[in-house]
Image (tube, rainbow, N blue to C red; front, side, top):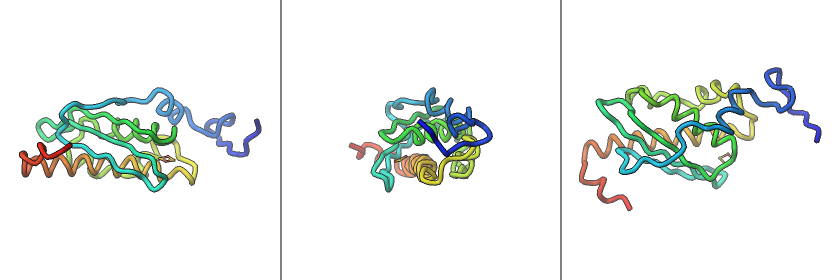
Length: 143
Ligand code: FES
């Protein structure tokens, strides 16, 4: 099969080594039981990504993601959770899609939304944590 999508970093596939590592050997895949914060939005493409996280002393002590999305989303979930680990909540809220794409060496234009979905999911999980901290009893409402 011939492809026109070649990059200087990986002429045979068009993807960087960083992308291939995160896409095919992703970090932080799984489920956090009884998380302090949780987010699971559906992207415009119809795919979902979820992140659960545990916070200790205002730092993200543990987090994990699952997705039913594309390989780009797997890579983005791996990167966004790697970037967020051990950060303070406020630091993690600053992680943006550009930081995720930078770590992957870029994404094809039609998959930029996968990085945005990963960042949106992280922010939802962090905001859920902040909301639960304000009103801890509401955590029991989650189904
Ligand atoms: Fe749907 Fe990547 S998240 S195509």
